[in-house]
Length: 316
Image (cartoon, rainbow, N blue to C red):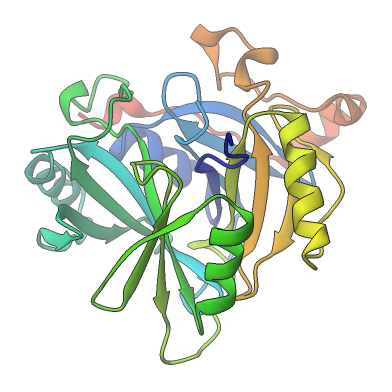
């Protein structure tokens, strides 16, 4: 039977300064700013979407930047590291690039046979780059990152939990994931077991809960094909005792939300309709786009949002 969930759709983090946020993810990491909009649940705050050329599902890292937000802390009940996929042989390039901009970075590590590096963004958000030759997606670059080293999209995500059994049951019995293996206390799951669908669980032995604020992940969203498959997922989850929201219209996809047993906020988002419904593909992310219900308040909303711009020319 065709799976209802096919991997990671997007990951959303809380950030601090909006301009620093854009500079890091577009200038240093080379992702495309595919959409500037507002947090639909907190309209006075931006919502930025960074991804590949079109913001395809499985490539989009999004942020809610709150000016002046204090730093959060990593801990149990959170996605503590977001892993991006880069081409095999690219890690030395990325180590040099990150050091060039004063970003501390780990030595090359090995996990499940793949090499990776680990570092944090300007808000202490945990990031990994995993080098592999299993990813046939095309990366994106504004030109400052050579395309042969560019980020292709997500590789996976690490959930830090106090216990894994109930979350494992959710993933493997109700969300089309299967257990791949265990290595050094890290438990890996996937749908097809390829870049873009990997979820790792690491048990946080300290038991300390994470504190959400700047530099922490707000939620992880999983992909489903369309509205019909999303309703099927919703029905399965509700039938098995999960408290799932109604379907919410996020303009570029529809969403349902629920807490997994370890406390991480899960979302299931549709692949349709995508980010080109209100901007030409060549000009994605250039204007502030608002949902129809917010348009009457555009002037007031824009006045409340700090001006931001692309500065990719400053990052060679």
